[in-house]
Amino acid sequence: MTALRAAKTNNEADNPSSPVLRFGADKPLKLDAGTLLSPFQIAYQTYGTLNDARSNAILVCHALTGDQHVASTNPVTGKPGWWEVLIGPGRIIDTNRFFVICSNVIGGCLGSTGPASTNPATGKPYGLDLPIITIRDMVRAQLMLVDHFGIEKLFCVLGGSMGGMQVLEWASCYSERVFSALPIATGARHSSQNIAFHEVGRQAVMADPDWHGGKYFEHGKRPEKGLAVARMAAHITYLSEAALHRKFGRNLQDREALTFGFDADFQIESYLRHQGMTFVDRFDANSYLYMTRSMDYFDLAADHGGRLADAFAGTKTRFCLVSFTSDWLFPTEESRSIVHALNAAGASVSFVEIDTDRGHDAFLLDEPELFAAINGFIGSAARARGLSA
Amino acid sequence: MSVNRAQRVDLEVVAGLIPPLSRVLDVGSGDGLLLELLQETKQVDGRGLELSQRGVNECVARGLSVIQGDADTDLEFYPDKGFDFVVLSQTLQATRNPKLVLDELLRIGNRAIVSFPNFGHWRVRLSLFFKGRMPVTEDLPYSWYDTPNIHFCTIRDFVNLVEELGASVEKATALDGNGQKIGLSMPWWFWNFFGQQAVFLLKR
Image 1 (tube, each protein chain N blue to C red):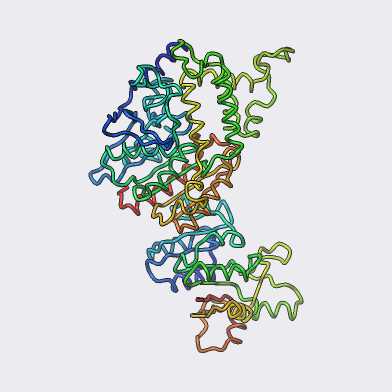
Image 2: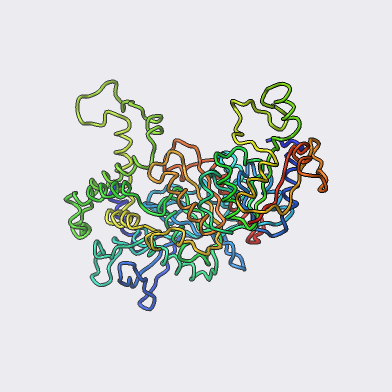
């Protein structure tokens, strides 16, 4: 089963089961690393219908291990889209009303060019020969997709975590193309602690002998153990201590007493192992390295002389930021500093902090207050944009 | 939140000072009543700053552009003259540093609108004079030990502060206990005695 899924993931890299837009030598992607990526491709999904004025498009940016299957069944896992609680017909982001676009980021592993994609120069997977990808590179590629649809101005760009970083980059680089922006549970830079956690994950992957310097496909292997450990460590950061304790406490896993060994005695251990093992079925290890690196490199203020407000100078975009009280990966202060910068730039900004113990992952969950805020923000933005209900 | 008559009149007086399509920052926007009133009747570009997170979340859910923040600490992030009007409605007396807050309002807005309960009102004076007690009234329902209102002032005190900050009063309105406007021809001492609420339009 695992092997089958693994093969499927690999296949998704070059020939995804979603629509794909291919750019030839005439349209290279300019990378922050200083090189051009060409040819390259973007795999995407759309939901709903673009109106005649092309004014009802919403771009959803996915997080670290997300993908383009935001509101439809994931072809690898068979599970529902990762944000189906929010997006779909009759949902808060109603696909009967809006045209929703979600693309796999560059560097990803579900169909947009990434380290698992075939390098046309060698006929083998890129592996580490792919240049480092930045958040801005991802956004540049998304812009080419948006241009492909002939959309002059996106009605809204939204996303959480790494998706929120892309939203901020969009609003900063292409503010005239963004009517409203909804960055959730994110920051304008990756903190030292966040980089530290990512480094632990990367080292776990690279310490796995099956990694083979990134050329594991050529050896018919995959660094599953290392990637699983990386996922286990990261997963802890997505939850809060309170939620972990509420869910698992010190409960034992299918046993009456401690076994005095290193088996998964505790439910939390069993849970994390499961999270790690299911993750390796759907994600490429090298892609995990690239994704984490893109977040580490993100520092919007640094790109603007150290002053975050300058990243948004003169913006007309309407903003709404959301943070969660128990998110220790992107604590409220990170959002608040963006809000202050937007204030300084004279931007229209709303900011909601939601009281929950569900940690960073709260943005993916059914959080009524989150939905109420998104609903209110999208609704008023739609009125301002002249979109009928 | 229920709105008593005096608050409602206060909102209407404030709204009456703001021309259509203005850029407005409402500091201490509460549950967004003023912003909503201004958006509906004046089509303003309105923003709010509110201390209570619950108030903020409710405002945003209703489509208002509001952020959580503290008038005492968060006004510094706004640029000079970023708004046509900055409103501080019934909040000045609850700030830790009213002078600094007022100074910030005058910096951020081309004009500032400030409304506050007048501690020089005759009922207040009567309570202190005859009962020897801090006043507890319909408009000021708190006891001294649990009141959020830590910096009361009278209309005269306020006018002095405005002068000290180098600002001028463009318009002033006092409301009596029935929410009626007190005639403009009346002298300051009369306002200070009979005005229960005061609304000032300031410029610097």
